[in-house]
Length: 130
Image (cartoon, rainbow, N blue to C red; front, top):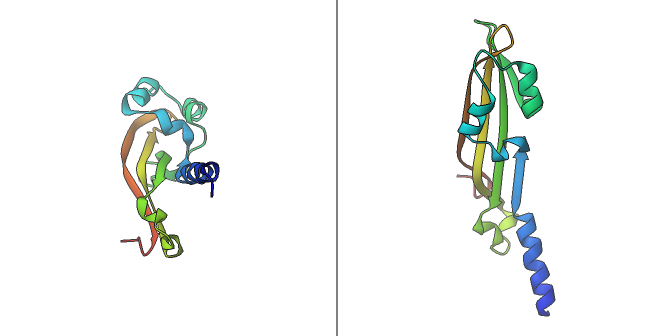
C-alpha cells in the first residue's frame, strides 16, 4: 500500500468520524447571542420561527395554556474505541456537545421566558452503552 492510499484512508476516517444532528442554526449560538435576539414580552412566535425555523418539539401546558418550543443541536465526534479493529461490530460511541433552546410563549404569542444551554453529550450503543 503506497502513501497516497494511506492518506486517503485517514481522510475518509476523519470525514466519517463527525456527526451533527438537529437544528444547525444553533451551532454558533450562545446564551448571550440568544439574549440579544429574544426579548421577553416582545419577541413573537413568528419572529422566533423566522430566526430559528420550526422547533424540534412543541408541548402545551394544560394548566396555564402555555406553548413551549424546543430546539436541539448536537455536535459529536467518534470516540477512540470505534477505531479498534472489530470493535464496531459490537457497538459505537460518540461524544461532544449538545445545545438546547427552550422557549415558553405567553397566551398573546410573545416570549414569556427562554433558556439556552450547552452541555457535554455522549451517545453509545452496544457494548459501549454503560
